[in-house]
Image 1 (cartoon, one colour):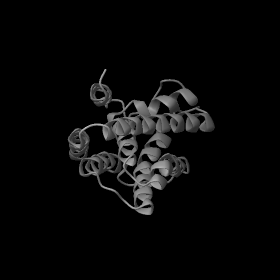
Image 2: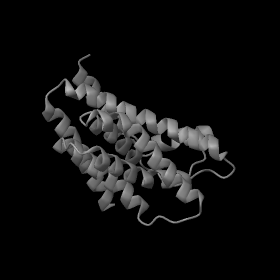
Image 3: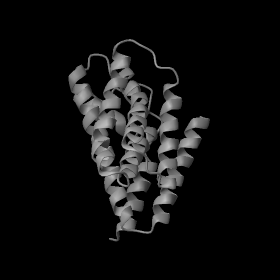
Image 4: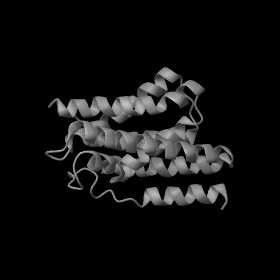
Length: 192
């Protein structure tokens, strides 16, 4: 199977994921299992995390290698804000904007300095982490839930990175088009 076919199939699977249960609370188990499943139950989470991984492939070695740390760091901070009982205004808008901006970064093949790119990624993930933390099922073990969504988040980011690495071997127009599609989905999510 050609690399481009694999990329398109993987993208199609991600795009067809349901967004209907993205932020309505989850009863799919407690602790680790629900934490593991939560990032995979919404198109917004899937696209943002995979798109960030995809985009990171074209960045400096430092930013590329640090991206999973920025992703997890932002997620943990966001979840901590939720678990601390604090509010974070505009969570859904922030999540939608993260998809839109990640798509734009891919479509434009933007290269950012490590400090700027890392801060942007961490800021995106604070909103996602807040949503994950706020929707932790009652009775779930906090550490197990955190471990579950952290593993899922890194896995989605690595899938995006793998797709990005495949795209480096193909015509850049395909990657730009994919970024445009992600940005369009983000714009749709922002419009709500």
